[in-house]
Image 1 (cartoon, one colour):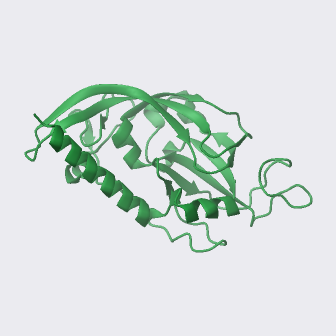
Image 2 (cartoon, rainbow, N blue to C red; image 1 turned 135 degrees about the horizontal axis):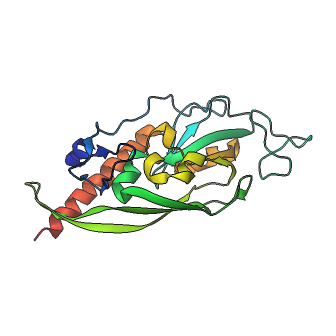
Image 3 (cartoon, one colour; image 1 turned 90 degrees about the vertical axis):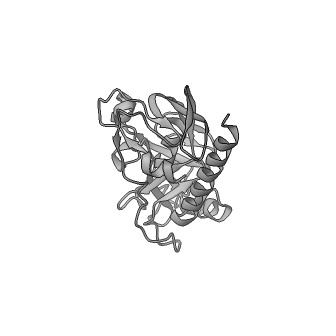
Amino acid sequence: ALLARSARAARAPGSASTRAVSVLATSSSTPRSPRSWCVSRPFASAADVSAFLYTRTHEVLRPMPGGAGEQTRPGSGNVSSRDGKSSREDVVVFRVGLADRAFDLIGDVKGMDKAVKVHTTIAKHENLLVLRWEGFKRTASDELYHAVWANTEGVRNFRLPFQSEVVKFNKNVLADPYKTVGPSEKGWIAEISVDRHVLELALKNGDVMEEGSYREMCDAEEDEEDAAASRSYP
């Protein structure tokens, strides 16, 4: 997976290139530095929600400044006080996007369709959107970096492993996902609110991870991809 980290590329807005799926981008893309990991404190306690979190399907959850305390609509799925409003301690707000690793697996996002409306409470693993993507897939390689590639396309479900409520969608992303969807903070897709105890349970169950655990998972995935591609080389 070392080649994957050194050869991954960034697409400039408006570029016609298509990112390669897993390991290498097209030659017309400009080089991107190795995967950058956020520098953040651990999700250490119920009062501390400062860290980026990650799902096993490569969504990244970025906490909103002051977001743990934004009140949600009365009657929503969030824990509420007697006056029908969530307290600062009850709710955490995140902007959710695709982590860098996700683009290795799908290439470029060409389109997306919303599956739910704003202010909808969504169940665990329920779709928020469906993403349409295109890219190149490495089907085989050897230790000398000879590789066989194939054009590929598909759809990807954008969903979360816990119950939450959709606060809003990124209008810029919906208008032109090819130019705007990316691993940076500007490429966020949806803003969601989640009950703190629901989030803590997802962390406990391993459905959501902190940076260290997520990094280890990505390394293991890339190692397996390299091994599988090597086994398939003619």
